[in-house]
Length: 95
Image (cartoon, rainbow, N blue to C red):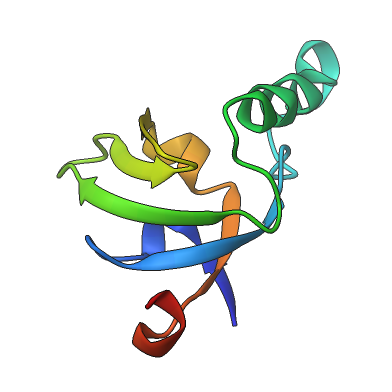
């Protein structure tokens, strides 16, 4: 089942299935086209479909998520993390 990265709890892992650069509202007019830059930036950071990502810590009150991906720790704002979709890994699949 596909869910947002923000829905994983601390310590849970998932496989990135897609990145939705645009959420469909508030992205018209002057802001059109900015979604591609976000997607490219996340890909440059190693967040690509098929990649395993682990939530290390989720800060409270809309704070950032610390994630572990490809041997590196990254801090991602919750607004951006909500656009990253993953499929949760079971305990057996992680080991």
